[in-house]
Amino acid sequence: MGNAINNVLLDFALPSLVVCLVFLVLLKFVAPPAVRTVFKREVRSYFMSPIAYVCVVTFLLVSNGISFWFGGVVERGEADLYMSYFQYLPWFFIVVAPAVGMRLWSEEQRLGTMELMLTMPIAPWQAILGKYLAASVVLFSMLVLSFPIVLTVNYLGSPDNGVMLSGFVASLLVALSFLSITSLVSAFTRSQIVALLISIGLCLFVWLVGLQPVSDSLLKVFPSMPWISSFVSGLSVLTHFNELSKGILVSRDLVFFLSFIGFCLFGTAVGLRLNRS
Amino acid sequence: MIEVRNLSKHFGGKVAVDQLSFTVKKGEVLGFLGPNGAGKSTTMRMITGYLPMTGGSVSIGGADVVDDELTAKSRIGYLPENAPLYNDMSVEGFLRFAAELRQVPASQIKAAVDKAVETCFLQSVRQQSIDTLSKGYRHRTCLAQSIIHDPDVLILDEPTDGLDPNQKHEARELIRRMGKDKAIIFSTHILEEVDAACSRAIIIDQGRIVADGTPDELKQQAAHAGVVVARLRGLAGTGIKQELERLSECKSLEVSDSGEDIICARVDPAKGKTSEDLSSAIFRMAVDKNLTVEELRIEEGRLDDVFRQVTQSDTATKA
Image (cartoon, rainbow over all chains, first blue to last red; front, side, top):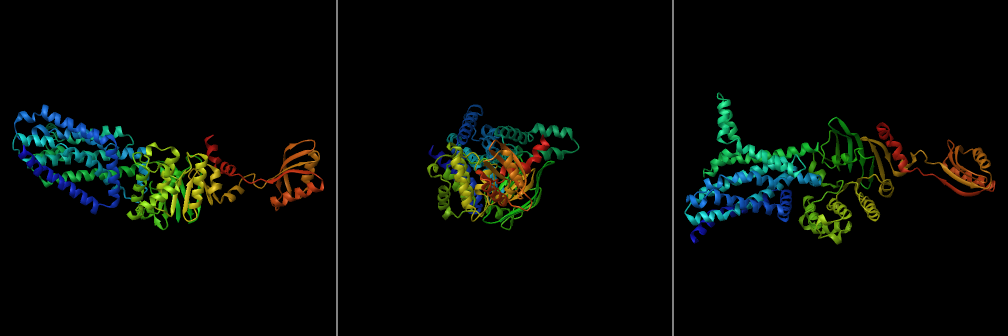
C-alpha cells in the first residue's frame, strides 16, 4: 500500500501540481488582468452554486461506478485502465462538459449582464477566455478527484503510470474540446437547456464520426476518394483521443486539440458579435 | 466629450436609428426622450460600443468607439436598461469586480468602492447578496458600478425606472450634481425629470431627432406656450370679452367660462407683442374698469404637449 501511494504521488500528484502551478503563474503574470478578473469571478460563481458540486459528484459516481462494476477493473487483473476506464470517460464528458459549460454565455445573455461586461474596457476574447478557463477548472478538478481509481490499480499491481497519465491528459483534452463546443453553442442562445441539448448533440457528433463504422461506410460511399474518410476521421476528437490515451504523446494530436479549442473559442466571439448585430 | 455623427442602425430591413447627430459637452446633462421603440436604447448601446453600428461614428473625448474601442470604453460609465447584475455576488464583491474590470488601480479599489457605496446610499446592503436586493437597491448597485471609475462620460438608460418617488428624487439630484463635471446622457420617458435634471433635451422619434434644445426652449414650441389666461370678475362676461378684444395687444381669445359677472378666457398675444405686454395691458384694463383679477398668468408650454406634438407622426401612422 505504501508503495502504491508513493507511486501515485510521484507519477500523478506531482504532474498535476506542476500543471496547476504553471497555470497559476501564466494567469498571474502573463494573462491580461481582465482575464484574471473574469476568471476569478466565474470560478467563485461555479463553486458558490450547486452546479459544480453536482457535476463533479455525478461524474465521479458514474465514472468510477461503471469502471468498477461493468468495466471490471478488479476482475481484469490487468494493470491497465484503457479498456475498463478511459474508453468510457469521453462518453461521460459528452454530457458533463455541456452541463458545466451551458451557462457560460447563455446565462450572461439572459440576465443582460453581457451588456455590462462587453461595455467595460475589456476585449471580448478576454472575457471568453476567462470564462472558459474557469469552467475548465471544474473539469480539471473532476479528473484530479478521480485519483482513487489510480490508487486501486497501483495497489493491485504495478501498472505503467506513464500510460495512465497520458490517458488522463487525453481525457482532459477531450473534455476541454467539448467545453469549447459548449461555449460556442451558448453564445447563440439565451436558454441554458437549449445550449445543453445542442452541445450534447454536437459533442456526440464529433465523437461518433471517428468510429470505425462511420469511416468504413464513408469509404464505401466514396470508394474513389479515400481522403474523405480519412479527413472526416481526422477531424474527429475520438481518433486523436485514442492515439493519445494509448500512451503515445503525439504532438500532432496535441496541436489538433489546441486548434480545435481555439477554433471554437474564436467561433464564440463571432457568435457573440453576430448576436448583437 | 461625446460626438455622434450620422449614427445609423438597421435591423434587417428595419431602420431603428436614422442618421442621428449630436454632441454633448462636459458639464452638460442631455435628456434623451422619445416614445417606446423610438431608438433610445439602441442609440445608447451603440454609443457604449455594445451594438455594432450600421453607419456613422461615435467618439468619446476624441477616441472613436470602433477604432479605439478600449480607450473609448474606459471613459464611459454605463447603466444598461433594467440594471442587469450578477445575482450570485455580494454588492461589494460586484463593485470590486467592476472596479477591476474598469482598470481602477489595485491600491485605489477600496476607496473607489467606498465612494460609490456612499454616493449611491448602499451602506446598509453592502455585504448582502445581490439576489436578495429590492429593485431600488439593484438599480442603485448598477448605478454605483457605472460611476466607480469616476468616468468623464455617463450613459444612463432609464436610471429612475422602478424607483419610488423618494429614490427618483435622489437619483435626479445625483445626476444633476455629477453633471457639473461630466458629460451625461440619460434616457427617460418621465418628462418632469427633464426639467429637474437636464440642461438640454433631445426628443427622438422613429430613430430621428425631432426636437433639440434646453427644456425652456422646447416648452416654447408647445402650441399653448405664451397664452395669457385671465379670470376677471365685475361685469357681465360678454362685456369683459369686448373690453379684452379692444386691447391692441390681443390677437384672439377663447372663452372657456362666461357668467353674469365673470369671464375666464385664454388670450393670444398680437403679433409683435409679448405675453408680458398682453398681461400688463389686461391688468391695466381691469384696474380702469374696476374689475377683480382672480387669475392672470402666462401659460408655460408643457413638455408633454411638445412631446405629443413632435412624436404624433408615429401614432398617426399606426392609427
